[in-house]
Amino acid sequence: MQQSALNNNDSIHRYLNDLRRYLARLAPHESQEVIREIESHLFDVIEQQEAAGNSADVVAILRGFGEPRQLAAQYIAHIEEGAPPPRGFKAIQSMKKSATATLYFAMAVFGFSTAMCLLFIAGAKFLLPESVGVWSTPHGNSIVVGFVSVPPMAMPEVMGWWIVPAAAILALAVALLTRKVLSVLKQHM
Amino acid sequence: MNPNDALMEKWEVQLRKGTLELAILAALQQRTLYGLELLKLLQSLPSTTITEGTLYPLMDRLKRDELVDAQWVQEGDSRPRKYYQLTALGAQKLTDLTQLWRQSVTDIEFLLANPGPQPLQMKGV
View 1 (cartoon, rainbow over the protein chains, first blue to last red):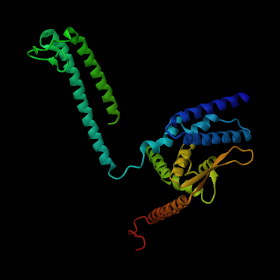
View 2: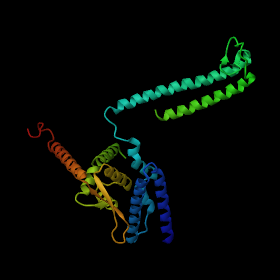
View 3: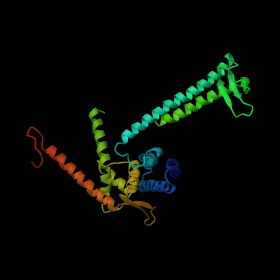
View 4: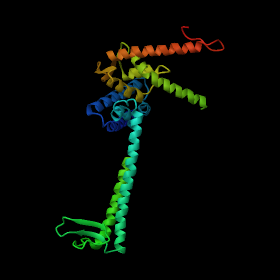
């Protein structure tokens, strides 16, 4: 009997702790209020069941409340949604959707083509070593990067063969960053 | 489950959902109840049975909409309980919803009471 009471308390505390975690978006006093009310309900029911001579079935009682995450979702729904959607909301929504889609494809084209250019520069260095590089004036107030037909004579090349790994690494970084941004955008589509 | 049962259940869920707010406001007419009492009352009626997980978040919403008020009350040795009561706004909403509900029941009863093959009956004509 005592053992089962301990187990009951354990499952209740675990449930309420989970719930508190999922209610984190509420103000602390609001979340406290929710927990307090549910706690009061749970112990009331247990007491009543025990007073009636039954052992309390905490699992069944908690089942009535549902998973902590789903229960919490109902309490924070008003924060997530804000005010109820006004008339014409659907049109706004679909415009927003197509704007996001445009942004998504523009980002994909821009990011991956930048990465491809960088890879191309790295590869071209092997074929045309004289035409690919980074040139800078001695005082650094002018810089030419990339693939030129006639190397700028007045400016010394500064990177040499280092441009190959540097461009390759940068290409990889740009590609990864693009993928990351796209996956974030995708969630909003 | 045959498809008809599934349809019936769907309809029942919709009906319950639509009338739940009215049921709660009606339960709190001129009395205060705490969550567990309210739950037991609603669960004692076949068409208003709901779970804890539906009731409490709904009470939270009604409170935010200022249709109900709540106070913690402690009586004797019992643990504190949160009691709900209607606000003036809640009482007004109850009146409005009651009117809509009764109108709806009257209309549907009228349709049910006037089957074919008798000629079409228009109410009040």
